[in-house]
Length: 324
Ligand SMILES: Cc1ncc(COP(=O)(O)O)c(C=O)c1O
Image (tube, rainbow, N blue to C red; front, side, top):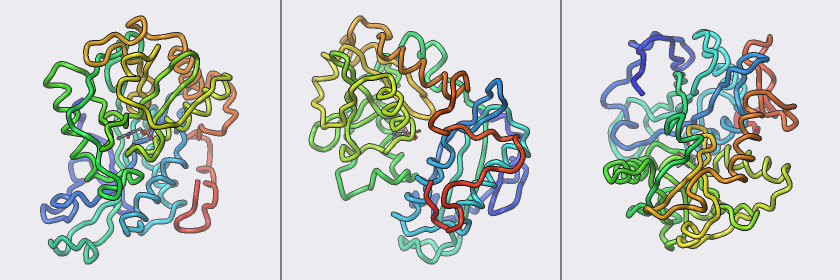
């Protein structure tokens, strides 16, 4: 996906032209990966453009910042408004939303604390991450030879730039070997997640997903899918899962803001179930796309319409680290 290279980017409170949104090469984040970020989506629905669970994404951004002792210089409410303002300024109908909080330019030692905490919000159009075909026909994936970080090394509840060094190793290996994605195990050899997506398995009408202690990012889509699956009457179990359960699952699928809900049709060249999208995956996909496209009642309050008057007051917006 190449950037069109136009539009406005929000940087520390100012809207600047895409080409001018630059930082100094000596910025701490470039050398030490000291950034925390989010990836959310705004969907074009028949009722207008709507952000999906923006508050939950911003809460995770504040959580990530807190873990790394880099509280943003903007409040939750200010950043929430800044996202809506940036979408409006770019007149976007549907887009991917990337807020990032990072250590900027001042001193280049490992100690990040002397550096300023800068914030930016960029947007771009991003369709189906693994291709439109993948949503219907599924993807072929492998188990990665790279593992996820061990507990108490790189905290996975934080969505930090540094963690994506591991993700890029998983992704590159998979792509070079001819797969769409890699599934990483944790350091105990149990299932963790993909390079940029959470994992679900289905066996005998029960959904399984690794718990947040399995070195996974606590995905907003993961949480949404658990809720939707329960709404549909399925049992969902969050538990440590052995690798081989992948191969004998009736169905498997990835979830994430980028991949949305994408079926997995094979792992390590072993067909999953019938080797095509299974009925429960399809039901979850349908429920997910019905919600994000506002085709059904938004009973969990997950959609926020961008062009409907004043941005809504996010939950607990009065305090800097307010919770969504
Ligand atoms: C490593 C990783 N796991 C899971 C996810 C899915 O998270 P979410 O559903 O919040 O996009 C992502 C997406 O950014 C990710 O990068």
